[in-house]
Image (cartoon, rainbow, N blue to C red; front, top):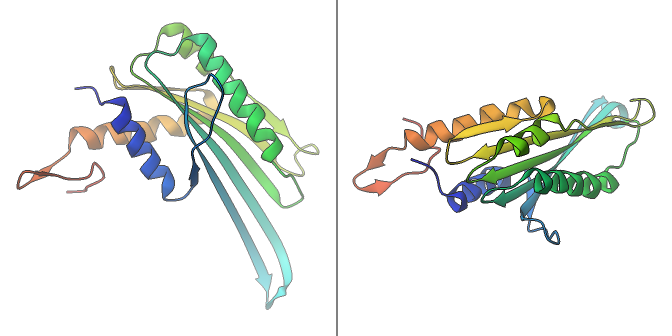
Length: 186
């Protein structure tokens, strides 16, 4: 039984809101549902905070698009928009490790040409030969009718995440006639 796109988008939004700052973003003529920003900074000190001996910063900008049947041109335009919108937000410095741009498509159906465009897109940018970090494009798509996931090489972790959401949805328990969350563990 296929999952409705609006239900799946709400589940995604809830899961992103735990660690990301979720905002309603507007993209002219693109089916952008929301954008989520993640910022993480780790530091280590020696005896006192004034003696810092290392720092590390990781960021991620996730763009979630929703369309019933996106074609190859629409997927390419969405990826271009997300990459071009995220790059000015990157602030590389000597403690910057990485900033990933994650592009997620939620679709009722996906055709083969659209999947090929998604899987072939590979973007990376190094800052000062990698000394100030790098940026990668992580792209993934969900076909809700077939319950399949597709990713580019850098976004392989998205496939397992979406499979877990599908598996949790199929095993969804009911207690006394009340539906429980799809994240409920037995």
